[in-house]
Each structure stands twice: as structure tokens, then as C-alpha cells.
Length: 354
Image (cartoon, rainbow, N blue to C red; front, side):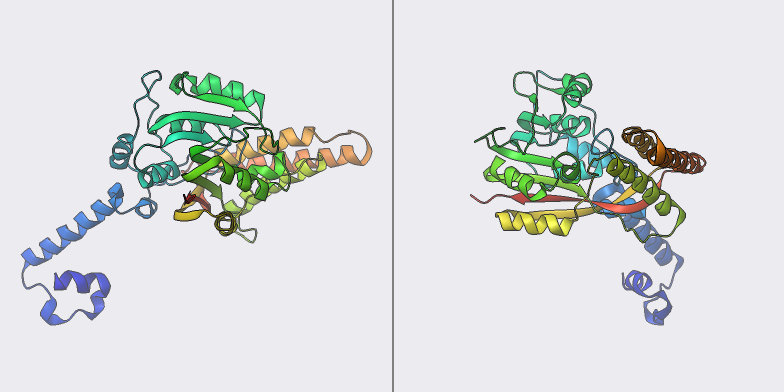
């Protein structure tokens, strides 16, 4: 063991009296280190070991049109442990195990039954995951009737019709869900889209969510850290250019763009509202070429929404189309890979005191 400690900390400074004196000692130490690494990479060492061992995978987006927000993949042994958390929902099919590292971390950090749950900005991924959790009921909210129809088409088989519901509403409407409280409120990538759907309402949304959490209940919050705009490597530059093109098209189309909010700001606001942030974790984000192409397709749609087609406006739209086609050609020419790590996602578990 003395030999193992010296070998791990500083092999070059090993003293002669701690070196193994037989091949058996060397074999023992080698097997011990191999077992330790295997133990860590199987998930018992945490999600960061998945990143070190190269097991990170690409995952969901906050909604059908959001830029990539992939997370670290959790291995099969953790999936089995997470599956045991699920509750009995006899009137619904059992959803497949999630591959989302953030969802898995939240589930493993939040044992026991969850009671009545609100999905404050729902999507197919978050609703499917919640249906596999130990919940008594799910109330899912979307601001778009089309998304509600999509939800029923994709997720209805996992919902308990006697307990779950998907409703359309806007949190800026003070008359929407007045005096309702829930045991758990999920805010999954909601804050980043607020600037687009309800400009300057970030603080107002957190206040609404605070009122929706019953005393003693929990807010489960996930978000995306803003990108480093000073990145210079090829892939980060391509990612930033794709997002900048989409943002420019939205602004020229008289729309507010999406705006991500950093974790530190969210923690400060939640603490100011009276929440206790009990746990938090950061996850590396993997972006694939397919997701860049998807984001550029979204940009193409926003370019066509720019009003007007003559004069300077027509020239502007033509130049934006050219840039979109050029960036898409670059993304599609990339060799097939598992993606590129750029940026971070984060998750917070906050409790409202009794």
C-alpha cells in the first residue's frame, strides 16, 4: 500500500524502501489500480468520471427548436439504480430509461416519493422522464397549443389520464393557476427561453415558481451557462456563428432572441426569494454537427420571417441566406464524431422552507 500511494502521488520520488521486492507485489498493485479505475468509470465515482473515461453522450434539447444542450451519459449500472425510483402508474406505460445525465443526477439526489409535480415549461423529454419518477400526479404547462398537441402525440401513452394533465398558459398571466401549489416544481431550461416568449420576465418567472412551490417543497432547476464568446477554435467558432446568425435573424424579424442565464445569477435570485439551494452540479455540454445543422435550419426559418423583400431588406435577407448555406456546408462536411465539448449545463435542487 505504501508503494501504491507513492506511485500515485509521485512515482519519481519513490524511496527504495517502499518499492515492491517481488513480481507478486507489482502484480497486486497493478490489479488494485485497474480495479479502482474500473470502479470509478462504472459510475460509482460520479459523473465526472464518465467525462474522463470518454463515456459522454449527446442528449436532449430543452425544446424541439433549442440549440444543443447535451449532457454526460450515465452508465448502465446507474440506470438500473435510477429505475428503482419509479412509482407505480397502473394506467400508463412505463417510459424507457432516460440517458440524460442531469435527469439521472436529479433523480438520484431526490429520493422518496415526489407527490404532485408541476413541469413549468414542458417538453417531450422532461415529461417522459417525470412519468418514470415516483410522482402522484403531473401538471405540465406549455405556452403553445401546437406543443400541447405534440405532447399528446408523443408522450400520452406514458401519462396517467386520471392524474396527469397538459395545459396551455403563460406565466405572465396573473390569473393562470392562481393559488396552486405543488410538492415539486420542475423548471427545465425554462429561463433561457423567457426573453423570447416573455421579454424581461426572468425575475418575475422565478417569483411565480416560488409561489407555486408549497412550503417544504422543492424546485428542480436546470439551465445552460452562456457560451464563451471569445472561443477561437474551429468548432466553438462554428457553434457561435450558427447561434449568432439565428439571433440576428430573430432581431431583424422584430423578435427577442433566446438568452441563457448563468448559474450564479439563478442561485442569488433563488436565495433572495427564500429558497435554500441544497445541491448543485455542473455538466459538460457536447455539441454535435447534427445539432449545429438543426440550429442553422432554425436560422433559415427565422430569416424568412424578416418582413419585406425589396431594396436593402431583400439584399440583407439574401446575404443572411448565403451565410446560412456556407455555415451549413461547413457543419455537414465535418467528419462523423461523438461531438465537441463546448460549454456547460447546470442543475440546482432548491427547497422552500416550511
